[in-house]
View 1 (cartoon, helix red, strand yellow):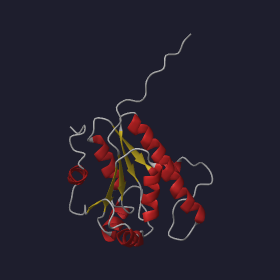
View 2 (spheres, rainbow, N blue to C red):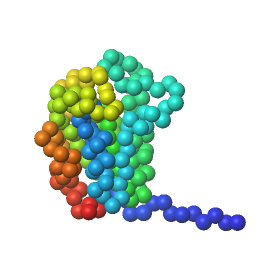
View 3 (cartoon, helix red, strand yellow):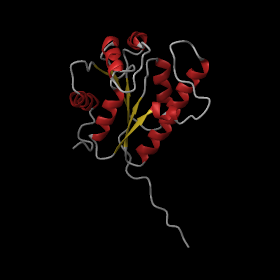
Length: 188
């Protein structure tokens, strides 16, 4: 019996979207809604990749933890591997991750083979992000507001920044499509 191979790859998608912001900024909601606007897209949630670690996993925390820091880059590398696979199969990957340091965005750039990288930061501010954190199902009680300051200080000159405080999810998605120029590449 001969097994016929099914071709997986096709015309590649046009790059990768990396959607960032501090916890509570709306990354996961907006990333899923953005991916849904394309005929072929995937949402890569790095928290889901972290959850794949059965033992030895270390989540990021406000206090310094070398192993947790290492795993931030491990999950970013895994997100890049998945993203490149989706791109070559014709799916636009939308990665959502908390990227607040220049070394982290540089790591994504060095690991992703697919280009261009559309880096988008949701920046509703620390107070609004904390309010959202306290109102959602996956409640985070840690105050991550200091990451907003770090992000604005270290990567303010990177990518597209969207203040989504007064926007609906659909309005935020529209702003991303316009700012990245991705409109017209499979959007309904």
